[in-house]
Amino acid sequence: MSGLGRDATADDILAHLASLASDTDRAGMARYGIRTDRAYGVSNAVLRPLARAIGRDHERARTLWASGWREARLLASFSDDPRLVTEAQALSWADDFDSWEIVDHAADLFADSPGADRLVETFAADEREFVRRAAFAMMAWASVHRKKVPDEHFLVWLPLIEQHATDARNYVRKAVNWALRQIGKRSPALHESALALARKLAASPDRTARWIGTDAVRELTDEKTLKRLHRRRPAHGG
Image (cartoon, rainbow, N blue to C red; front, top):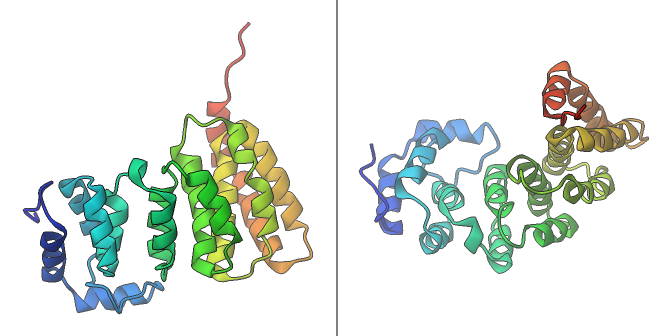
């Protein structure tokens, strides 16, 4: 146990993270494409419970992010209050994106922020690889988390997915694929539209689009996926 609670300051947290530093774990992270030049080597299995212990604190999260440490930025993403995240903050954090891991967890936070929809469009238009990835990671997280949002809201993202399906950069193409699959698994109605796009991309002459589409078709036609969607299909009254 860390001994840290909801009254922990950013300095308290940074000191605790430093005490957990592990060269062995840091080397392991590097093998997964995680930047480790500003990392203590503390795993997410430790950071997630720590985030729950310290609770949400918007200002402290911003201070943790500003420290530049990997673990502090992950804790910032885990413990910030999405309702208080502004577009200006998200754009500022995006300037610091240097790892797919940081991008994906920040995107999880941004997906529930008030300006999420505008951020998706802004990030998708950005030519920087990690920033563009953030747009599609946000789509994927939103498809999972925003359960009360109508299906029509997610349909408007399919043209963005098609538009950027030819971006061959590794971290972008994987996120585009992720977004397409998650939208398609959200509901029976979205499944139909997402699968149609996946099949279109699978037939594309572009190698990247073809990979994205083929992989998405495979998952969206998987028996387990279809069974889950069937359970979500609304019953018709007699």
